[in-house]
Length: 281
Image (cartoon, rainbow, N blue to C red; front, side, top):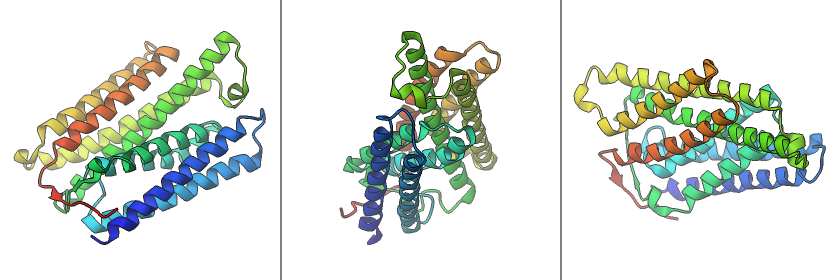
């Protein structure tokens, strides 16, 4: 497919813009007060990266006739993309200035990692979802929930850094950008709730279709997804009952996101009917 070199070039450019945003955020940390211009520059770079990444993913989607989730490369790119989308929702809503720095570093890392491992993009699924819009919606919502869980991991890391700074009285430049531990705990709860709702809807949409055709159920993939759903659901209930809070809650969020990323390997390896394609690079 002639579109592949172009879409990968666009995805490389998006990754560079995310990296530039991370660099701009790091420069802002050298000063105790982040200026409006610095915040605008960071958001402009991230918005430009999001736009270009969206175009690149759209080209891939047009090439394969569906949502670009046909291999590990596309899944990781989609997770990075959803993280940036959610940042623009969460950041302004909670006025979390440092979240842009963390998000840019996180998405740049995912984007570059996926681009630098050619084996992840060596095979692709054409018409992966059999032109079934419901299964495609199920897959897109499931991966988009990972964007919420990824952002949750970032705010959990911020919570741990804030707690560490307060306990050791290390009130450095990073400290001045961090929200209070109370606000971060509230943000973490809402992000986990959002991710769990998205994943629940995804499973509901998938179940409504699979009940019509039990033979089409991919057992390893569904088992991995349900395990992630149950793990986050249990943590959400424990947090709601105040049995898992503060630092312990933040650590659990980080560990569960690592587990969720490992579960993606099961989801990807269980795919069938892939069309082998080695894109030009």
